[in-house]
Length: 477
Ligand code: ADP
Image 1 (cartoon, rainbow, N blue to C red):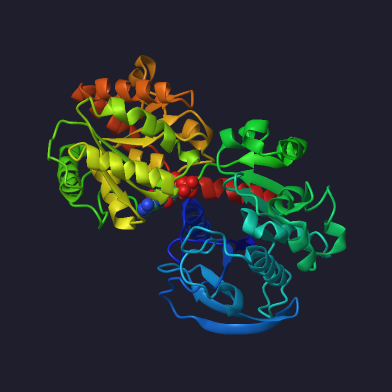
Image 2 (cartoon, rainbow, N blue to C red; image 1 turned 120 degrees about the vertical axis):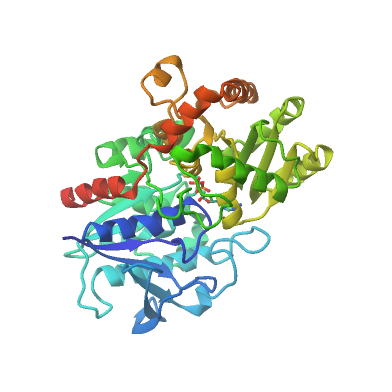
């Protein structure tokens, strides 16, 4: 049995802004189910949703500040959670990273540097709990300084750093770095310095004993200039210590047989019932309730990464066809505006909900026929896995985790019963449009479509499989 300290800035259902939270909510639970002794550490944000008891366990002094460590549990689980309580830094309403205008909180470097320092205290058993982890598992830039600080400790635990998205690196001006009291040894171009800026993510990439990312394809892609953002050389240099483990999904939360958010439960054997969710979705979005018109769904952050611009370029041609399109998401104001005006222009075909809505996300996964995910890059991606489990066929670009989890529909993949989606190569609106047309043709053959749905629904996206791979890695460290 390993003792694991899992360090993260978000974890569902405590707090979530994206896929990172899904992973950090599920993986610790899956590891606990494999009998590992795991504790999670996270800042005590104002918006944190704790349903279990919270108790004070100790007060420590770190970087001249008085910090309280509180203890609770992940809702509905035995996984212990340590909350880093420092109201001056974490007692802000809303999102952990940005204010209500989408601007980063001005003291993010200070907030996450302190979080990393406290995680190091916990990792070194200096929080008086008589518990010293064997492994410290860090996630994304917010935790990047943990392996860096730990590298200066004697008798330290082994460290693993998981990259969920290379596009976010935690870069701050040199002047900020100076104000953080970083150990001088870490401040050089072979350390935390990146083109005269402070890079949190480099702390993970350089000092962790091993690096993983969330899909094998993305692990290769980030070693190239297109996806490495200037860190491809470093990653190539560390490639012996870099691997990809695909994320699982929470099979209890995302299960069409039991999902409390959907109108009609169904399984692969009762696929015809899926239709009722489509009608409900059409009703909620005030679209005409047609059964046989393909309904396209999209849920996600409205940013260039997700290929939203490609969809916008396609929509004028799409509305000429028999189709409906529903989108739930929020992000760049320009995208939001264009989408809203298209919805007003084509009220029978396009419906947009700007915002974040967990329940509605489930209904879209259940009610749509086709899920759109034309990402420019996608470290792993979760929605394409959710949609396959709901028999909603994904259209994805062949990149990162999308390439690793969706099998294109071709004569041979139909024959060997693996076809589970539509995959296209190039990040262009014409390639996307071609894929959409291909999907519409396949949709018009109900027998073939049903086969694709059955293939998709029977795939194993369980966390157990991924957790076993992480465990094997911990054992090798
Ligand atoms: P990323 O982490 O890049 O945002 P992923 O596909 O890995 O993308 O994970 C996104 C997660 O966030 C999924 O669980 C998705 O359902 C959820 N999500 C994103 N936007 C919304 C939204 N507007 N409403 C509800 N859930 C959302």
